[in-house]
Length: 145
Image: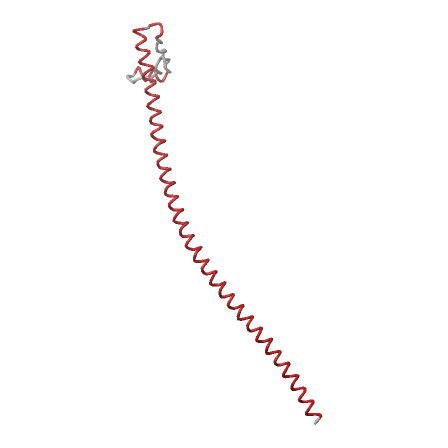
């Protein structure tokens, strides 16, 4: 009988121990299941973030291409305007030189005191030979500039 009582007590202690271990295992299982669901939720969130960032990158690439195109167009326009400006400056300079020459010619007849005679051009030996053989001597600067 004493032995049976001892076995009964041992069985009850084992039962309590097993019940406690089952509770601990069940708690651990619930914690792991919660952790798995949290991880799955964070994976879904990360996938959505990746998809969003991918679409934003595509939109930015389109914007960059449009910006590059507008920069190329603006560069082309500036180059054209620069070419026109240089041509205008050359025309203005030529017109000023022509007006100075015409003004000097008019001064020759109407105001001889202001007339500036063309400077005598000293030809180099090569230019003299070229001119003597029927060539045209190099041009001189317009007087009265």
